Length: 331
Ligand SMILES: [Zn+2]
Image (cartoon, rainbow, N blue to C red; front, side, top):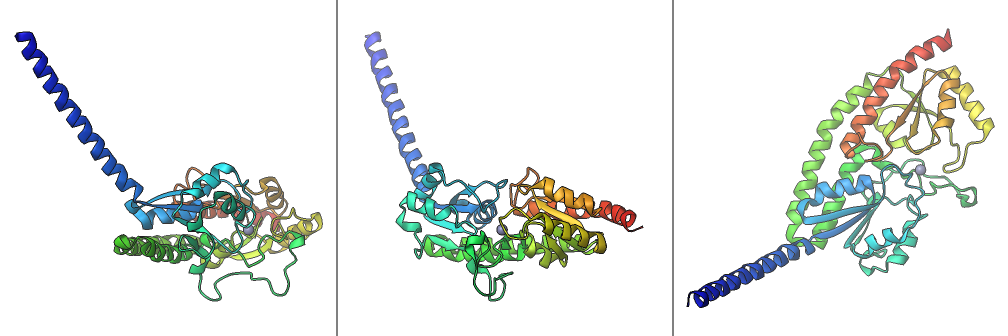
């Protein structure tokens, strides 16, 4: 009898365990069901992914295609990236043909109708720029055979944090259309982000405003928006045609200009030809400043705001060297 009772209670215990187990499964399905309901955002760039995370919060799941340390003009269109796009509800991209070399290929491979051009799930973030805000729009015909990779104007607008604010608001509007139940949350997060960026901008502007060296030579035309925002001046570009290795004669001319008009700062992104930029810096007696050209380009640039923190900090430190060497060179 005891054995039977013991078997019965063991049976009841097993039934209870099964019920608990079943309840846990239901609970986990519900939880994962909520996770599935999150809007899946795929950003082409790390900057855009970071902004999407701030605006989307818990309502979105964000991934991105081009790692922060890579030159966004050139990215191998790998099948693993197409698979990310396959599941996306919203694709956010830089536009102005920055991703022209790889995004169309990935979109074809992904076969996701939600994010095709013209669909609600496709967002060209360059639409956040107002009229006249795109820098270096080419006048006349663009000769693409020359390899010009800025045919619609300079696409690197995210290096101006004010554009980051506008992009955040644009994303909030689109997310609100895709997921109307969370519309207020998207918009209030975008405004929170705007306030955060604005409050940090004052410090960065003051930091760079105090620099005595305001002239820069850049490797690629990556820094025009940053330079305009911070009130610096571009003396010249080492890579005279975007995406094409610079001609030696052009570089010699630039070195001459740097010597005459120095001190300058020579700026390159971490993915540029640092050696070539370094040679220009050396020959003009200038400081070479290697900067994160994107969020996550370096370990320190651990977010969009951290990137500007690093950029302004490095400009400030480099200037001390530039002033010293420039003064020596001029004497
Ligand atoms: Zn470029």
